Length: 186
Image (cartoon, rainbow, N blue to C red; front, side, top):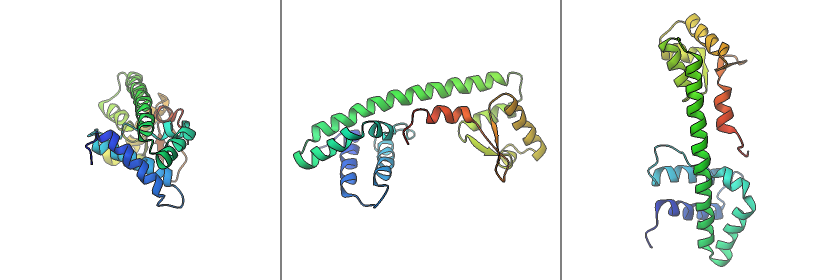
């Protein structure tokens, strides 16, 4: 077998996985998740920065037609071209989202001007885990429960987090979720 670029190889394997239909339901979701993980691993990315689902969902007819053309006519070139166009589209979208998240990170820190180092670390933590309970933060920061609640109250007043009404008192950073999930097709 010829040697292929890891990205091209990932799309060849994705096609093969999608066409065997190993699951009754969720074949597409599982296949796209595996594609994302495969691209990360085979292309030596630091994280799953390239998620193809939005492109495939937005162009579902061409996605399905391209796979069918491979099956019926051996149209591999068209399939790979379609996928690589998707890589460009999704890479541009990922870069745009990363820029928005960096700007949001700067904005959050600017809102805390004069705040403590502990609050600054909490803001940084929100970009790793946009939902966090008071008890989780208490353990992470090594502070008392009242101190943890007071820290969240300050972030809430700054418009950085919102209290969620769960059994455990948890806060979420809706602005972070807004950037991550904007225009995502479900």
